[in-house]
Length: 280
Image (cartoon, rainbow, N blue to C red):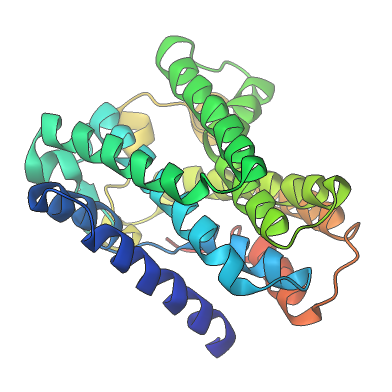
């Protein structure tokens, strides 16, 4: 765990540095509340580990890792407004703490800070831009056309969750200056991890205790939001099995990569298994 914690700490330090420099101070307070109130930092960890697995310099990946976490946090602000969720990561969500207007401004400010971190690399900009298009399409689809089948659910999950995971891994491979085939393989791995993550999230929302989860449980059903449990006739146990199958597919994609750093690859494998076993 020390291996992962040291990398997470580097991401956390850079996150704090970037957000403390935001102006004006009122906006800085808001974006820090959104991003620094907690979080598993899974996406930036993927970025760093992928870069390291390919023998890249981790320092080259840190800003990309921070950027993708900021994009993710910005999207959560909007999710909470749509869902009318007043708790995020065990603290008041941005709109509950500051109001709808300031929360939307904070989300916009976060995206600006993130893209400033990607702007030096054309491939990084393309990877994140494509992910943002997918995310936007997913958000719009969820509001206008509720999935009615498992296939439609999977498309939505790929757009809303898998796309940012894919970008996180692609950014790590880009930071390590790898060829397109490797970037794609890592992207497929991470997209499937993201979808498995979302499936497990749906199960936890249906079965977990709110205090243990760190946010209100039962939101999917209350908001009539499409989840794997709500859209299909699968039981939570069967939904978990679908998540495990998706995790296995992620590991298959990862096996196609010829990596130079075994320890980082081991942690990427562990991540694919963790996302379907986590309790929050």
